[in-house]
Image 1 (tube, rainbow, N blue to C red):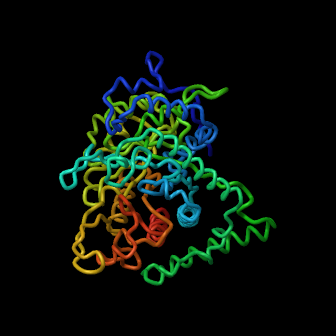
Image 2 (image 1 turned 135 degrees about the vertical axis):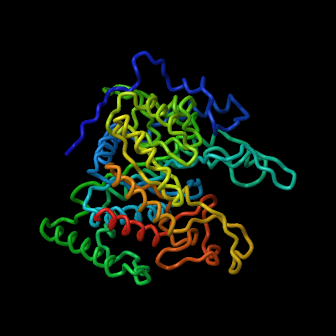
Image 3 (image 1 turned 90 degrees about the vertical axis):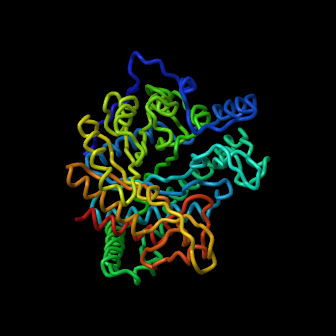
Length: 465
């Protein structure tokens, strides 16, 4: 069943909106560009470059988000905490894509529901910061805001915001997206044969037999289709894949927002699915002002500090007509608080009649700092997340939505296709003492390959139940 999604602009008729109207609003988390002329030149160059995505793809995603809101589809959104320019390498991109595709197969098989894949990459180069500046040994410099803005090294030359990075970010996103599309168009065939998956971790899990049975069913089913049809299953149809990033640096987003032929409204063609973070979701702020005027579906993060009344004002500004597929609310409340904080948010939004898609982000509310007492990282404060807390938040989200008669429509996770040691727990039982063995993230800890696949299998099990 396909849910109809209006294509007309959602801006109220009496509103005066333009891609630059956000500049008249208080706007958080924006870099202090030292050279306005250089910024104007970089944005003008961006505006002349080809778009990264198309309005046709954006409309397709909007329809699928509407189906997720109705309980007919599940959203799998995942990728890096923050991409780096140096990370634009084929092996890293392939590993991320592979784990997302494998997770989606597990969800389809185990959850018996269609799955939409959204990568948290090909543009996730900016990060919000808790402070504008950082001080070390008496030296104060601008905070590192992601490769889209400045460099991580603590030196004035690196930390000074440089507008040419906006253009470089577009180029890296284009290279990443081009490679992803080439892989998908080429079949990326090994994922069709789960015997090639790295599933050694299931031997450590009490659910090993169930996991292996699910994998065997996927392989048998796909091979049967190949035999009956006579064509490799991966070539029967192109796998749809969408991109997303936090719409943080509005100079970058504005420069890539344009009108397109034969379609109403304005489209942010830097990504299919931009989201607004907790720090920038104020209803009277510049980010809400900017994104209310674009046709893309929008994610809005909801955290413990979110004021429910202001959230409702934000939703009214972003989606005055209550259009299906327009809004996804991505809750990041933490395993300890989600059972208490989520129900009043769900009930308040439900009373508006707005058909939002509910997505659980079980990562950001469960970040903590530990100090290992042994191992290679002994005595070093280390950011991590407990896999048990990640699972607990997802489980509680399922329960809350079941109890309230709504649908959990997806999960949003920070992950990598590599076997890093950044989050503790999982089937292999990564301990705090093991974190330093392969801790590679420059910012937030990510689920590794095994933890990501284990999460998908546990979610699929919950979807069945």
